[in-house]
Length: 237
Image 1 (cartoon, rainbow, N blue to C red):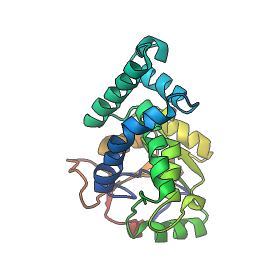
Image 2: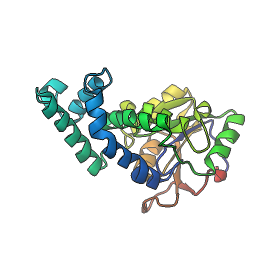
Image 3: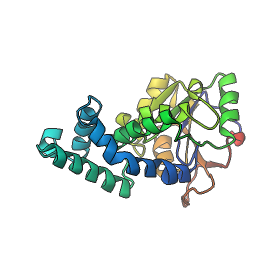
Image 4: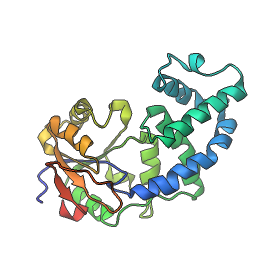
């Protein structure tokens, strides 16, 4: 299809990168390192905003209301919440904040290196050369996104992106989120293309007036009937 947009907004999981990498590599890394990371950082400034956000996500007014006063019990409560959220694949903001912090150590050590599809880097180069404004919108935290694209098998790709958004701007299945993102682009909604592997997200983007394309990548879940354009590679954009 001919790309008529001036802005491109990309999902990550199932769009630029395989679902299997996230579920088979990145999530297990968090589970493995969770207990040690929380213990090591319990008294650090990093953990406080995570606890506050996770408390709000769980329906509490603050971490003080949610977590026991005893430090060991509080750590176990936090870890249990992380595990059950991951078991249910909940896209909670606090969980994503904590995952990003744990992944940071993995990327820094070199144990983690983000996989991307082969067509991604050529497309980023092509779009950048054409003057397109390329950004990322993922349920993963902005910090995690920057770690991911800063440590890929193709190198550091951060220079190709002009912006990053996570669920702090709103849920990915809510039209208002895409309206807010379009406003920050300072482009008309119709001149922004959103690419994702989830039809419900594309429906919300289309409701907000964005162009849409469904990424049909290997391993992606079937999406059923929809009216969005389908691409199997960024070479088609």
